[in-house]
Amino acid sequence: MDLARVALRAAKEQARARGNAVQQKRQARRGGVRSGARADGRDPLPLGAAINRLITERGWETPAAVGGVMGRWPQMVGPEVAQHCEPQRYDEDARVLTVLCDSTAWATQLRLLAPQLVARLNADLGQGTVRLIKVSGPGGPGRRYGPLRAPGSRGPGDTYG
Image (cartoon, rainbow, N blue to C red; front, top):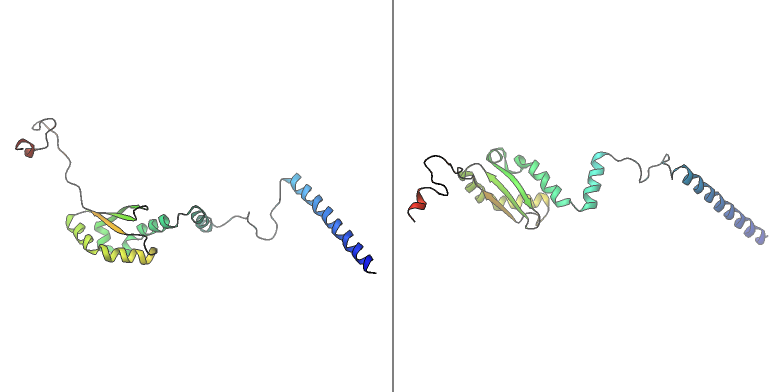
């Protein structure tokens, strides 16, 4: 009796294996496995999920988070500071955020607020994401070249030494 059951089980397994082989040949002829009623890895993803997967696969979590902070700058520092100071770039290796201010007074104010701002950014992004905020003020006026300037001159200071 047991011998008959073992033989029947072996015959069923062989038939199942032949059926699987035939099904795989058909799928290969049709161009591969097709999507069915259940979700699998080939199904389309919502855009947000696809972007999050790409960011995670490539290891772009920190730059993406800092980019999000640059987009939320007014909420992070307040509308008045955001009106006069804007983030320019983030150096991932040195972990330095560069901020440009429209006046030297605002640059000085932001330098005084920098430690609190670094703490707030690290609380939002993760500890150690931003080590330093480099604040730069407005640049000076450009050199004016005209009929009263000698070529190569830097202004009145270069004639006195």
